Image 1 (tube, rainbow, N blue to C red):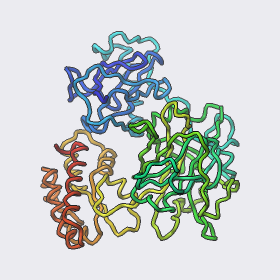
Image 2: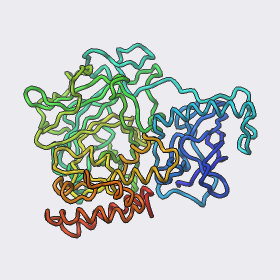
Image 3: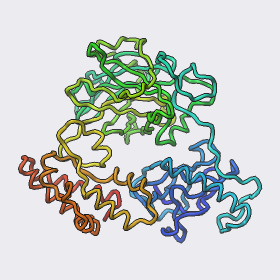
Image 4: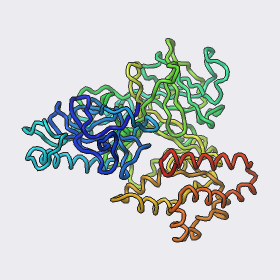
Length: 510
């Protein structure tokens, strides 16, 4: 359960939260948030809270809940928070990792906390009993990556500089759409089942793969998935499964794309991803068992990836991609050339598909190791409501605009007015996660009351003063255009309700 953490609460290593919020009190003690200091006796260091619950915000920072991780000298994920109260909990049991720039500040602060506790300049009921001899701040562990070439020197996490076989990094397999297995019950609509097209992972006997989304149903082009299992290089330079389970992003020295060659055939293309490339980090997604414990699901990029355990080999699919040989033996990993676009090319070109990659981490004792995967993201649908970043990333040449409702300018004004010491980076992040809707470009540009020069300062200030009223005002303005375009009244009002619900879920109003 997502019970809120407070200062003084213990951790799984025997430590405790030293300091919490200055504002929010829960059961007579201050709530603890991402970045707040934590003492760990196991590594004799001060660490900080590295995860929080985005549904509960204090001073623009996510409050921590039971089970969230502490970043200290212990292996990440081994030190977690334990709630001692059972009266206050978050609306959802969800987690967000501390942002890298915020983590750097929290890390620096641990050294200040260690010094202040050691010399006695800071004392509280929660520092009593902390040994002051050898108390230190957090020292980052050795840098690791998810995958690297076996040709790199032991202990190094450098990226390659020349072309080399993908086999140097691990095993690659490509899965494509097939018919539903005979064991699948009728009614599994919207699911594309996957069979092996090319390559081997060595885990084929473990289960069956499928994708679920509005776009994947019946579409071979979007029923394409690449899976990559890195080599087990025993030099301590690769993340452990437990480390990955506690991360939101992970560094890697290789990524893969689907590209079309000069013959127009789809090929797998590998890229060296040095730390300086801007492409070195990949999202980490934790898969979870379904409620009935029959299969494992991971939700990412608008797609649900489904893995069902079985005792037989994966189905081999007839390949609609003649360029992919069974062994994928010719796949090469390339350096990123200067002034070269490394974005994934579309297949087929006319379908305007975009691709997503991530590292998929399975539940403990599932028997499946973490895998890097690449898959197609679904296109955005008109009147679809969601966070701005997700919708805008999926909107490609579709004649749709992603409209912030309320407007970015009004929301920025609200944030500045209501949150102290908010940074530009934090504002940028909040706006990227703000509620938005996909509408035809013509409607947005003709009818929106906040489009371009119409959103004057007075309007921004008015909307910021009452976000709930602003949603209705902004929505009423575009509704006339949506009706003229032929959208049904019921569908339009459903989108309005979804916008209000998303604002409430994010805590903008009740």
